[in-house]
Image (tube, rainbow, N blue to C red):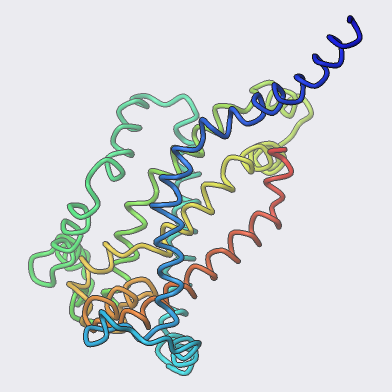
Amino acid sequence: MSTLIGKFKTKRKPSSQLINKSTPYLYMMPAMIIMLGMVLYPFMYGVWLSFTNMSLTKFFNPDFIGLRNYIRLFQDGVIFSTFNRTIIWTFVNVFFHVSIGLFLAILLNRKLPGKSILRVLLIIPWAVPQYISALTWKSMFNYSYGAINIALKTLGFTPINWLSDPTMTFVGAIITNIWLGVPFMMMIALGGLQSIDASLYEAAEIDGASNFQKFKNITLPLLKPVMTPAIILGTVWTFNQINVIILIAGGFGNEKTQILVTEVYRLAFNFYRYGYAAAYSVVIFLMLLVFSLFYVRKTGIMKEVD
């Protein structure tokens, strides 16, 4: 009898283990269903759209045209100049976001008079709605009445046609986006700096290390796990930034002020070439995916997390 009870218990054990293992998945299921509906379905729909000729005239009955959109996209010379402009846009913005943000974080991590007020002032660009900041900067770029040209005239320099010259409009958009992005990197870097054990710096001082050696051998390596995800996020956000370009340039009029994402928006909602714009979007997604995988692998951030 005891043998039979023992066998019965042995048979019941796997089912209870199965229930225990499946419980987390049951809790995750509602979130997974929402994610599938809100992320995976639009993504797969966009990929399918890129293989069709959907436009305003073919909106309800698009034809499957295979890779024709992708072939036309790479045969179009505009994409390469737009791609180069996007790389410049992304690199310059992220470089100044990180360098200025890290510099300000190091300053705020020291003993300074009025540090709390200074910290609030530096966070303001992040707290103000993006379109208000962009429109404020646009008024500052005005040729006749803008604060920047008034300052240049006062210093004896020639005023600049910020909003008429496409190249200078693009430079103005970069300046605006740098101003907007610095507080995020500053806060991330400041959080990382405050988590570094002060005894490491004290030990380095006893060994006679200079400030640069402490920054190179202590600060930068210990900030790496914090800053790497922030830089990836910053790169993706900057690459996909659309508001600043549109607001500073005043729309999609000039091709020389466009980056890849604004070009996609222009193709989809100005020219109604939905299939072609979807192919553009898929190419942008693959670029960002390759960059993220390469960067994560090169920096080894996932190994440190494990």
